[in-house]
Length: 111
Image (tube, rainbow, N blue to C red; front, side, top):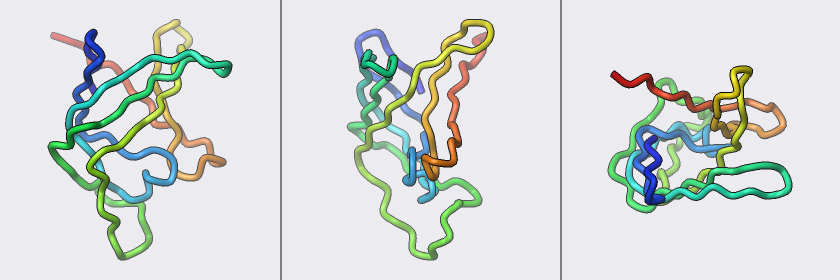
């Protein structure tokens, strides 16, 4: 995922959040992002507006034999946190929200 200063975003192989994660699809494309600050802390809203590719995780976690059609647009809400070194961490929950599974984004080290 690349977040650009002008509010646009480039997404690559991003899984669905919450129960959508169980469908096993990964979306790539372009969209927009916005940082919001509500009572619970900062949230990064990411919206896929132009899908360019769909892939499947292997193995898919879905137990149903029918494969749902991946969405052509999608919206994620990433929570903004900090690690022990005060580095920003973006994450969302996947699967059953009560399980507390977190999908954490990591920053690539540039060359």
